[in-house]
Length: 204
Image (cartoon, rainbow, N blue to C red; front, side, top):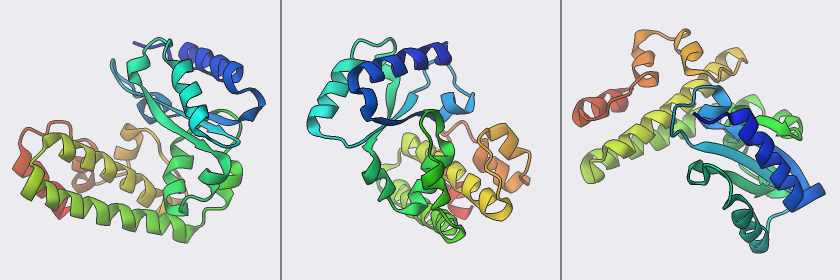
């Protein structure tokens, strides 16, 4: 298993060496950010600079190329003004899922209101519905279905926040707030029974 605290320290040091004072935010998302990572889990790092050019992306790629677990690094790179211009419904999930290591997302968080969160729930549900039907008819992919279930979990987080004002990162803690009907979405693991799992998601 990756020692994510040690790894993030090395990542931060490398980014400071590469981009210096241009760094606005460094953060961690996904399973490592939630403390739920398993062996082989992606490292979803966030790097926000003052701006991002093609040269910056080439520099970034070159910098991380020698890092341990390079094949697991994914995540998000952006300029700060571009990030602020995102649709607020998308920014909701981004901000609340990011564990900041350097910098702060508080300014962006404060710009997100209740209507934005409602729209995040609505847009997420619409996209899952369309994706589920398309996958059942055309792709018939268990991998895509797994991704749609993951998207549904984000919708569940957003809906719980909309109703309570509390954002729960950990799946186990979120599951404890749910009835069995919703837990079957949150806790789904096997997707070999494609038709059954697709039906459950579509009806949900």
